[in-house]
Length: 282
Image (cartoon, rainbow, N blue to C red; front, top):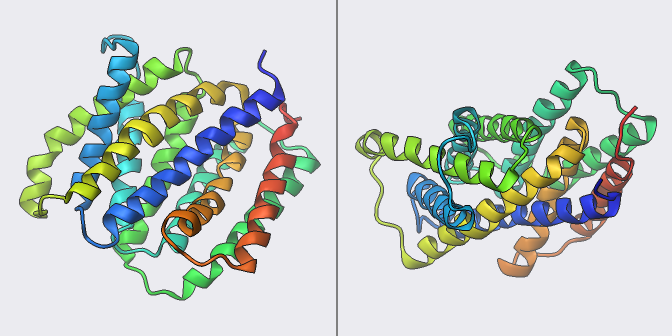
């Protein structure tokens, strides 16, 4: 059985990959270098091809159409939301909805949190809101907020589906391939209703990195960790992503490092540690 330390280590790697997706998306989309659907397509197809080569994928018995649909909703909603939303506000919407989806489903299914886990969850989520609250003053598009809410529900559902996976890398590969097929079928309709210019080389490179490394490989790691986590624990762990993404913005996008960022990141990481080191909830 995996040790708590190994679970925390692999889970941390997956969270870093998820945060890197936000940094790459902001880099490619915010300045208009890429359209949202183009970014989505490149991310999905490159991830599918890389994972298919890794596992010598055959469609039969790998992944599911339900998982693929959830993945596509997340990736597309994420891309479209970041065209209009500020990064902080978008992350708050996304992970609030992820928490509602995963923890709510866990409690509905009879899972219970210990007092320590509740304390960790409340501390981490409170610090997350404090970190992102300055972004709440920025006007945001209602459609973009709905897109990010859809992305949060898609990712929450995808994570819940992944908990039953017996072959996480192969199932991730199958989900990416199936999601890519759905996206390709939808592409003519999307481009007719909302044309996009050809993305630039830097945007293509960012989408490829997002698809192959931080999505394909990152999600395979996440699917491998999920069976060892409770549903609520999996949701709580993902609260770290906005803080890590904000730190990535400081390091790679020259965003300012503030005392609010440093303190809230420390509280979030500490709260998640309290909530996840105790592996089995009561």
